Image 1 (cartoon, rainbow, N blue to C red):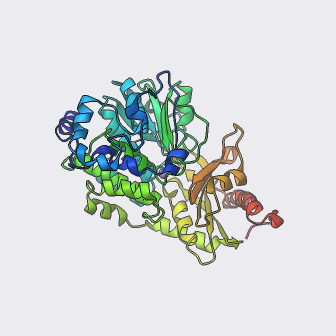
Image 2 (tube, rainbow, N blue to C red; image 1 turned 30 degrees about the horizontal axis):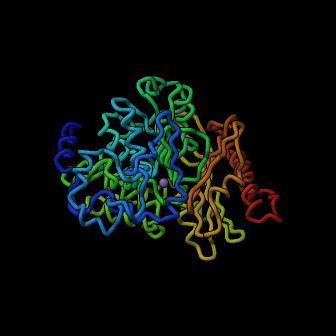
Image 3 (cartoon, protein in one colour; image 1 turned 90 degrees about the horizontal axis):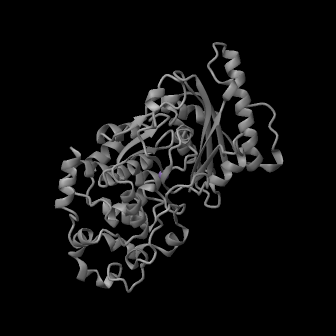
Length: 459
Ligand SMILES: [Mn+2]
């Protein structure tokens, strides 16, 4: 559907569900969310804090007060027309930022292996930005390897481009000159190989919207980082509810995007099992627009044979220490990289295991690049995956951590560097894997079992 058509529909059906104004959910925002949210404006045009509409979330505010809600049933669309300011301060700060960047082009950067939360959130941002005549391209450097992600992208027609971070052959593709800035969604630049490229090109960071722990590495014009929120999809859904883009259930793009958001939200909350009030409220809102059949098709994607083989290897190679299940799965093709988190998901289901770490040596034949990729999954409430991974593996030469995490899940990537590249000699390949396997186990066991921190040989 053309952009003009989308705009036309938005104009006609600004708020398609009567009686549920955009500000409804504001009254349900928990104090804890408000306290933990990091929303800053580091721009020469800070949010006007004197404006009562943007700052006041108290009960005396007519839009937020549940009692006054009935009286304002028909108001929101009029409100948007007459006064564009939104009652949610974070959505309002984003609106002001987008307004300042009208008629520009932005590059949305996802983590190298984007998950449904990242994909759906980026698409939502792109659709919101279109309302401000901002064109966005969604880019990632790695691969779409999880079968659910491939199905999601294929069935929704989500616009997505893969940028080659390494190798000179696709330099033209990485031309940043057409963009006025970049946006990080569901990451803070630490998990993308594209960051050095945009930084080298001198592109400014326009926005960071994420729910991982604060990395403090990049200053952006608009920052909304909420480490206590379970999914970035929840944050983006709240922007939609706040009125940044009124959804229209007769618009197929909106329906697909809402379905993608629901999938993102479900996948980052372990099928809503870890969802908090705000996630349920976001899911409830999305449920009015989603295509259940499409969601089912995405969820029923089957595991490939390669993924099953990696899970088998992870089972065979696992060793359990102090309720930690640790497993190195050896060499993995780049396109099967997502088998690693799926294997970790599986290993953590074993009796008496609360945390699983699975890692492998991932190689990309086209790029001749190799790196160690690992995933952590935990059900132990007191274990912070972000802290654990940072402590286990430390930082690289440039002071960047090898990984991090969020609630219950984390990941790490360690470049193989000089030792990169496939070698015909099987003995050499085995030796190389053994060195990395031993080193990673040693680092993990140092934390898991401090008394026995030196590991002699491999299993
Ligand atoms: Mn996420």
